[in-house]
Image (cartoon, rainbow over all chains, first blue to last red; front, side):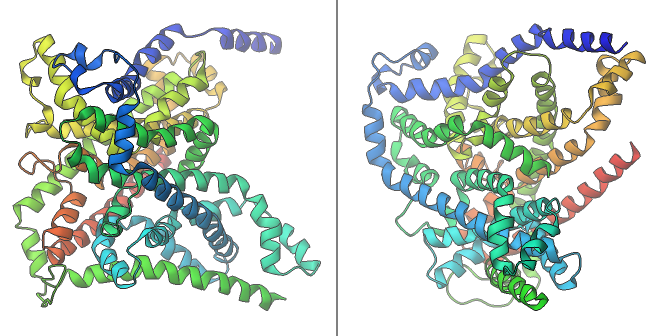
Length: 287
Length: 288
């Protein structure tokens, strides 16, 4: 009986469902088509863009990089790219340090202490606060504090993603036995040192999840830099797209070159870290 | 020894809590305070009591933005969840190159919503009408984004294009929690096709349906980037989402106080919906 079962499942695994595969391949066109359109338009000259569909969607006559050079100049690409990178990297590092510390303290104390369980609920309920209500007061407040710049944006991100990340870290901490810390404490290690030497390294899988979720959200965010950095002469990549959209006018080839440029960094990141990103996103949502 | 631990905890928690209060609680309270004033965003202002709130409920533009935002959120949430559940089951079936397909179908989610919106803007303005002309569909020969009755569908398509990717990944991990022998037992009882899905799969992945509904509903109620890239609220203010209206009129339209009141109401609505949604779906899970 058992042998038969094994055989049955073996056979099942070998049978490929071709009908589903065909549908999946057809479905991929909904993703490939917009990307294909972006690429061919980005490489064409305006003169190649006749009004017919075939004129727009055919392959370019030559794969010239002129549009990209011009788009880089118009949108000040390297400048915006470096600010986007700066903001994303610092936010992710701060999120991993600050949110994991807070998650640790709250995870270890909230069951026993009324104060900490209140702090936990207080911070986690921050998830329900839409940016729309904070936007106007924050624009005023950051200007008053001299924080209407990239640094202010980082501070705000650290606060905005705190509810989600603290929730993730405290959830993960439940699986880490307290005995691990107690053993270290008996040896005379301070709580602070115990945290960095034992707990922080153990939470590595959760660091990866937090890093992926925070990085994707920060990298693509438009609203926070728009509201906070608008007057500071610095752009992030999405903000540059927004600010220069009017200047492209009818030159769609230039505009599409610029769209493609702004997508390339995240595409490279996705191709390299696809597995970590998929894992991170799943962990973050399901936990 | 125990004191040392308590002191360390406090020294970690207090500065972080202070940071959180400074940039989350304080602006929230200030927003509520502004909502009782006629502040324009600059200069002096007076207290107006509850007048902003009274005006809010008679302001046609505000009501229109609420109707639009809810219509978009409800329809998009349904469309996204149906599509991503189907896609997740396809990606979870016996196919070759599974990880390639999963990776490819997730791609839209990592791209920035603003640029995706710009690309689709072009698609709706030039490509789709040209296809419509070729196919002889007169109704679609102009850009759907410039038609009052159709523009929201364009926004829905762009929102869905990115959100399906996310929800599919969550549904796949849900489907993987269903043990194979449940299907085998169900197969013996003659459960196939729709019955198998309705009575075996769906109840078992209900927690994941909850996650996806909450995630979608909340994200779409706060829609902003897609509006910015596709319609800027037009035509005739038919696609102004609540967030967009608050940003547009509050930040630069001289309605700082009035839009603060709008934001407070929006906040209360979001909290009420989130709480209700969680209560409702957790009840459903228990029943099953």
